[in-house]
Image 1 (cartoon, rainbow, N blue to C red):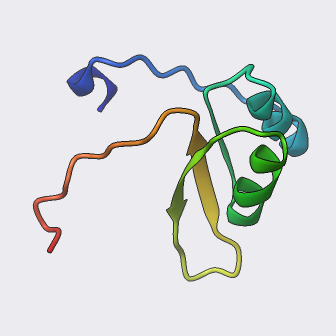
Image 2: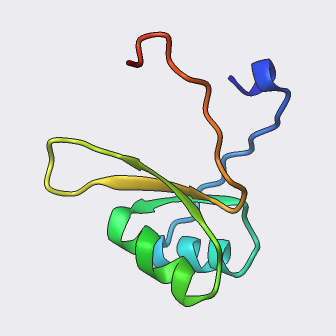
Image 3: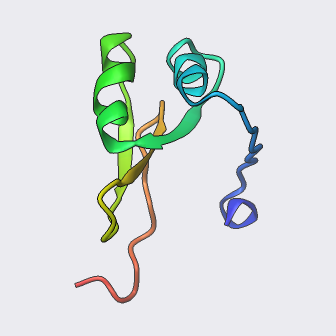
Length: 80
């Protein structure tokens, strides 16, 4: 997908969940994967304007992926 849109993605593992959010909030990273409530609270409390892509699931916890830039995604051919 990155090649198709001409972007470069580097995935970095941070072994501390809260520290990964703090690094994102502090500007060290352009994106982070986190739970939906943390996505709605921690970056906002730090004054970071964030776009959240919330991925739903049937489990009790959901995950969100956040980025600093407004996210645009190609429309699925199956979308109504």
